[in-house]
Amino acid sequence: MLQDDVGRAVEALRSARRVAAFTGAGVSAESGLATFRGAGGLWEGHRVEEVASPDAFAADPMRVWRFYDQRRTNAAKARPNPAHMVLAGWQDRFGRFTLATQNVDGLHQGAGSRGVIELHGSLWRVRCTGCGREREDRTTPLRELPPRCAACGAMERPGVVWFGEAVPAEAFLAAQAAVVYPAAGLVGIAAAAGATVIEVNPAASALAGLAGVTLRGPAGEMLPRVDALLAGG
Image 1 (cartoon, helix red, strand yellow):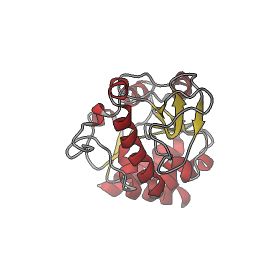
Image 2 (cartoon, one colour):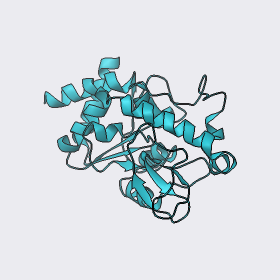
Image 3 (cartoon, one colour):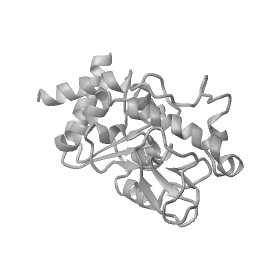
């Protein structure tokens, strides 16, 4: 049955006028990065909401920065997995291909993906809370916690989207143009627009009922199988 599902996914992709891929924490988990969600998803006894929100930063910026400094260090050690590599190759395989991600680790870019829509920002950007200056910083670990803006001296914050914050307008509009909406809206909007939704996940998600094709397994295993059949003609 799984082989039949892989074949259906291949046929859907071959007949598609454009392909949009949306990735979440699962694909990063396959590279060894913790999701910090669900069972066991605590950091030093704190739920992720307690170290990833504007209120948390206002209450204890050092704790928040220690959390993100650890995430940056872990992400710097991680390597793209086969799913990342397949998606990077698909930008050349398909004439109209868009990749949007909720992940902030940069592994898609590390695999060679170009023009990735980062809906939740990036661990590798920091933004000044005073003048708003944003810069890239790949130093791990950071030399100073919390880091300070070289322009105005104010404290900097991680350049990510926290709980309670909106997705950056530029990323939202780019995703909207590709019929890719942030978070759970993706599947519903795509299905309503007539797209064939392919879910790749070891377990059914809350939106699995909208998927026309379901591949039950890790993306790092399923996508290479699909890609091999696409390459074979």
